[in-house]
Structure formats: C-alpha cells, structure tokens
Image (cartoon, rainbow, N blue to C red; front, top):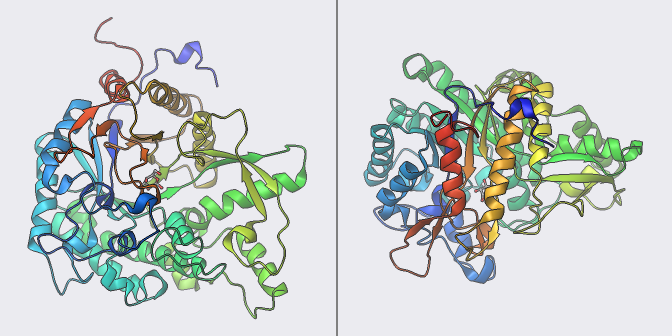
Length: 481
Ligand code: GAL
C-alpha cells in the first residue's frame, strides 16, 4: 500500500499511546523465589520434549531482579505506555486470595510506581497464559468454577493496584490458549482433545472476562476511572480465489472462528457468530452428537457478556489467503470445524518463524474490519512485532522497515479510514522466552544476551527507529523544521 503524499506530513493523534509489551512468564524468571507458586508454564517447561531444546522460563530475562534495567530500556525508547502482565501465582501462589504473597505485591507495586514516576502509563494483563498450577489441578479453564475464581483474582488486583493502574486487560489471546493448550497440545496443559474442550475453555474464558469487567464496572469504576478489556489476536484473511464463493465463505468462517469467536459475544450481541454456531451444530449433528459441541450462553449470560469491554485490544501479527477445505466428518476438531485453510501467499516475506509472514497492510484491513463489525470501538494495538531467528544481529534492518511500514498503515487507517486507533504496543520490549520456541525466536526492541549471567540488554537498530518515530509522533521531525 503506497504511503500517499497527503499523508507524508500526517502525525498520530495527540495523546497517542506509544508502548511496548512483555508478559510475566516470558521475562521475569524467578520462577520459585520469594513465595511464588508454580504456574502451568513452569510445570510444562520442566517436562522433557515440550519446548525447543527443553528451554524454560526459569530465568528468562531475569526481569524479577533486573526491573531497573527494563525501566532504562523503556526510558531510552521514550515510551508513554508499558504493557506488562502479572504472574497470578506470584501474587496468589495457590490461585485464590486465601494466600497473598506480599513479596509478589511489592514487586508489582515497585514496577507500577517506577513507571508512574517516569510518566509511563502501565497497561496490565491479569493473565497472559500462565494459570496457577494449583488451579489447573482443579480442572483449570475447563472447570466452570474458574469464572468465580478469576473474578476474585481480578477484584484483588483492582483493589490492590487500581488506584494507579487505569488500563486493564483480563486475558491475553483466549483463542491461542484454548487452541494450543487444549487441541494442539503445544501449550500447557498440553491436551489434545479435539473439537470439545477447546470450546468449553473458550466459553469459560469469555464468562470469566465478562464477570471481572462487571466487578470493575460496579465496584471500582466510579472511584478508579479506568478501562478494562481483553487482548484478542487475529490474522487478516482474504479469499485465495476472490471469484470462488467457496473461498469467500471459507474466509468468513476463518475470521469468525478466529476473531468473532470472542469479539462477537463481547462487542456485538452476547453470542457466538452465527456462522460459527451453524457450522459446528451441523457438523456435530452429523457426527451423532445430541447437541452442538459449541456450548450455548443463557440469555442472562448473553446480557452479561454483551458490551463487557471499554475498548478493543488487538494483537496482530500476520495474514492469510483462505481456501475452502472440506473436512471428513469423522474428524472433530476446531481446525476441521472451520473447513477453511489459511495459506501464506508466496510473495509475503517470512523472515523469522514459519507462521509469521510479514503483511503490514493486513493490519489496516483488519482495523477497518473491526471498525465495521464491532461497533467502531476505540482500538489499542496491544501487540504487533517482527520475529528473527536468534541470536539476531543488532543491525535488524528488516525489522526497522517493518515498524515503519506498519506504523504508516496505522496512520492511513486513522486518517483515511477513520479508525479510532488510540495506541500501539510493539511486541516486545526485550528478546524473551518465546513459548514453545524458547529463545530461538527474537522479537525484542532490545537484544538480550542469554549466555551472559547478567543478561545485558542492548538496543537493536529497530529500537532506535521506533524511538525516533515516537519522538516525532510520526515520520516528520516537526521540531527540526
Ligand atoms: C502472542 C503472545 C505473545 C508473544 C507473541 C509472539 O501470541 O501473546 O506472548 O509470544 O505472540 O509470538
């Protein structure tokens, strides 16, 4: 997409949030110190054969001890916002407020206070994949009791930190944790239970989010005046053959199963997308199930879920061309229910991991789609980034170009398409533990030397590039002209 002449001088709106993001398990380390309880990621990574070279987040970037170094990175970039996540089991080692770990509270108090002292606004994710193991032992996200347990945790956090934290995300990417954790088995709890628990887990996640939002709304909002949402990931998808009705329908299903699964209930009408419901119901019936494998919300639940977000938080990484793929009936799974196959166009560069084709213009299209289908919400892009296979060179020119092109697409979305984009968080502040890929994949604006016991952070060229864009609030240095 060309960056037109009229937009050459355009800037981001005043007060635009310039951020970078991390997640507790990926950066903190200190997995068993100062009273922290284990999370499902601790358990999972300690098993052999789950993660690239059996790497773990036991030490990660050691941000538990090196927070001050991270703060220096944040200041060097000139960020106005920083997105971090709380480790639930660092705060509540058993997952419930029966046991509160004071040292965990002190750690996050310090981070929040340091950010505010430095005029950086925190955005906090309550749970970024790392469910306390003690809760997994009681059935985790599959057990409906999680809805009340999550609400208790959320209220504890609002109560403890909400005087200072004004931007909250309940969950990160429920689509990813449900799909990879319960169907593909490559994230904890590592289950491969195709076609069933993935939907049950998604269902409980939606209700957990909505209940916590209502708690904020009724108990804390008036006093604390913050905003609460959840981070949803989505690809942008286009039909492989635009003249094929099958591919067009498959593309609609692809978007419905990825974004609509969570966005439709919360931002539209309290229920799953119609095409998702009808597709799973029809396939379930033919497979001999007495009811759909996709659970139903009661009317009361629908009313609770609808509208339970104060802004849209989007994680965008890549795009797909979608082909219709007829699935054999005997195969019950999330993947086959979709009957849609996402393909990477050969013209799209794939510099890092295989799934991550780089398609900056897909973000503009996705933003417009969210504007149209989700009632024109305020949008924060809470993750977006570019992976390199590690260790990566400090001269990461491709990543520089990626950030430039992506931010230009966002400017176009704001100025030409009228999308209400309020902020952008680069993934990630630091190279970190990239889940199943361990440390083999690097997303940071700062390089971390994991071989050196001091874990030194060094700014990549892309960090400098991002800092320059931030200081200009766009691409033109108005101060110099
Ligand atoms: C997201 C996730 C992040 C990060 C990123 C890059 O799915 O929220 O934690 O790992 O992907 O793969």
